[in-house]
Length: 429
Image (cartoon, rainbow, N blue to C red; front, side, top):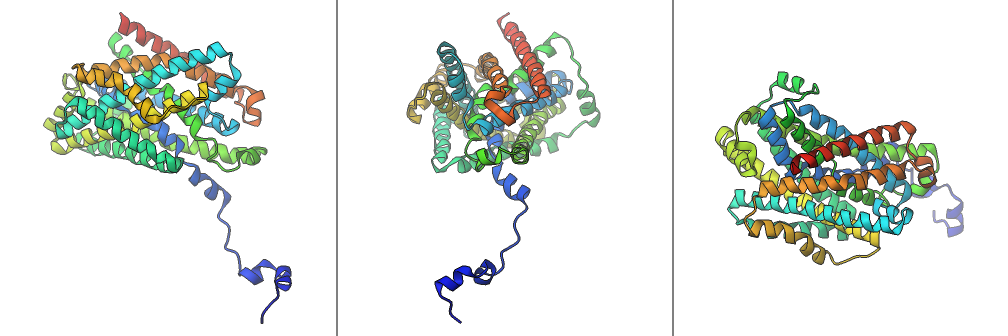
């Protein structure tokens, strides 16, 4: 039987197109495709600077500072959840909102320090990648720095196809880092009693306090606060419509929090693995003073496979974190100044200090440490505006922080700023 268009139009859809498939449960359909932005941010928590800090902590004080890594990771979860929510609720990133809400002199000051943070970040990542290439293939450090910069530039080009390809590449590299240390941890073993003791807050003298401050200070990376807030707008569907109801906001917040929990959880496990490996293998020795020493020590005690896993993890960390650092520079300039410069030009600007260190024979590990000191200067300038903006009902509407969240965030900010000030004074003195 043939039907005219008029007759077909009045028939039920099930008679024309057949029965519809059962709909996917809303939570499953909506949440899993939203994951990804936090994994880009998580790369900063396992960058080459963290390698040196965590191994030094484990080698010098065994399991004592394990609780610091756990506490720092919990703080990171809160901060990254707030910055993701800011982008989700407003559709704009932190730098753009600072330009819109703060006086012009404040905006310019925030931009200058954010650019300094981006350069310091790139220095650490380029140096880490160069050291990894030297360990793996004997590539001279300056050439390794150039290769790392080029590879990071290529990775960043994946963004031309949208956020999802870039997030997949960065997540893949993050998993490489995790697998590398998972493999090494199996060989090194774990002292369960030591882990339990390390979860109890304690210190072993003034040096352990300074090193704990360094671990905490290196955890909250200001540049990924800007980046994460720029990755969430526009990738969660029609946020404006969904966010008008408490149910819609709850669904979006659950997706964002799951993203942060999984990504920051993975980064925390990697950092803990670094300290545990160092506590098992390097306690009381000087092998963990440099990245090269760690590589050699792993080879001596666990064999070539462990040394290779360390070098590959360091290389993946350098590549991934360098591309994220360059992206952070773009977000900062576009947000604060409403200006864009070619990525290649920005790459050359941020690459110069790292190449200077490598060409003129500077110690790579020392450069990593001082880059973390510079980054600590930038933490208040990103964290305080973040708390201020997310607690503003005028800006956030129904997404505004609860008073408890703001209070906890203020305590975390005060603690981080105070400990980083202590770290800076320690380095100066």
